[in-house]
Length: 246
Image (cartoon, rainbow, N blue to C red; front, side):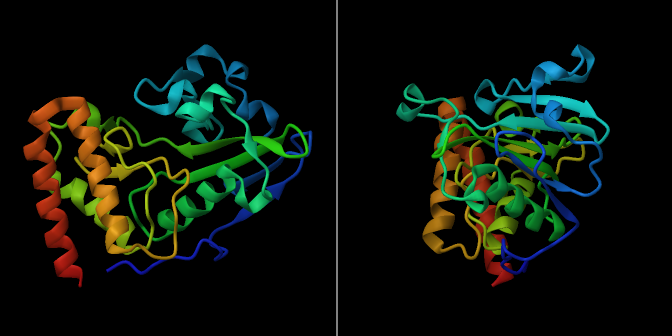
């Protein structure tokens, strides 16, 4: 079984840059060359090197291409009622607690543990005032992957269950496990994305149950009762994997 990971462990080559202006900083994997302010601005990309992510993303995620290859650029956006007050501003609680840096570190740990999550390439934030900030994240793209929301009939429930069980075994709770945040690659393997607000350091039985039920609600919302049998298959495989790893 995969062991719980700590988000404070210094894994991989990570560099901290403070050249984005307005007190901004950037945390990036060392293999990503030449990152500057233009990386985070969708309008700076040629039309052939950017297009919007159509599934999920709150209209603030793009497939982009640069010196690092194919990637996904996501600007953090609020959801729910609070979005009526502010779409993209968050309360400053220190650099390590910015949404982008926290997500970067969890994904970096999972990626180095060999789990199927996209490698995070860079994270950034911008202080817009003394108490507020905006943030963005750049991750490697899973080539030719399709969201589970668009391919439930073809996806292998055992592989979906395995990916969920793997992050739980690593001690990570996913804050928004839904059918848009599970991708199926051409080989049929399942990848988990969007670790915003995820928690590391342990995953209780209740945490696991909450994740699975959130996925169920998402699938039923998308496909109605037709999704019930498929979710049940994921659940059965998940239970088998957990028992085998105990």
